[in-house]
Amino acid sequence: MLETDLPVIAAVKGAAVGFGAELLALCDIVIMAEGAFLSDPHVKYGLPPSPACQLVWPYLTSVAVAKELLMSGRRVDAGEALRLGLVNRITPRGEELNVAMRMAEELAGLPVSGLGAVKRAFNRPVVEQFRRDQSD
Image (cartoon, rainbow, N blue to C red; front, side):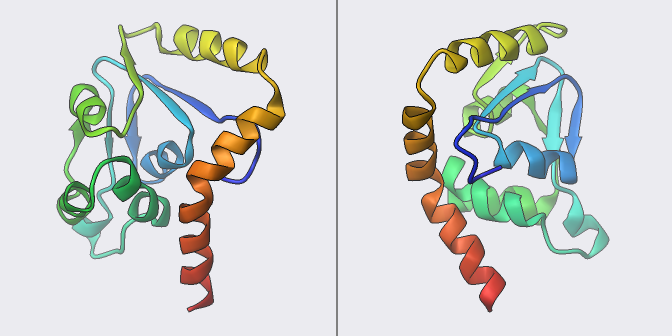
């Protein structure tokens, strides 16, 4: 998801927990409905966090905030997720897919080469860190 030239857009209408939160972290654009939430609760079960959340969230928000969320496993509602930079937009419930589709249509009208260049530039540090972590 990080290395494809095409943008990956998520529309979230409910819970994005564990692997769901990880998928959102890998998306380029996240549209979340009011009332939706995300959480990586692995710590509550004695497990390490989702790798994508651990790698990507510090780039989206801050290291301090990412640590807090991953160390507590707490639920983050749509409004807080937007304030923290973990999602791009909040919509009224039931509009998330329409907004995501409109955004996809707008992006589909742009040259893939340009979209890919932007995506590669932003994702390069995360991809390189992931590769380093895998080789350790």
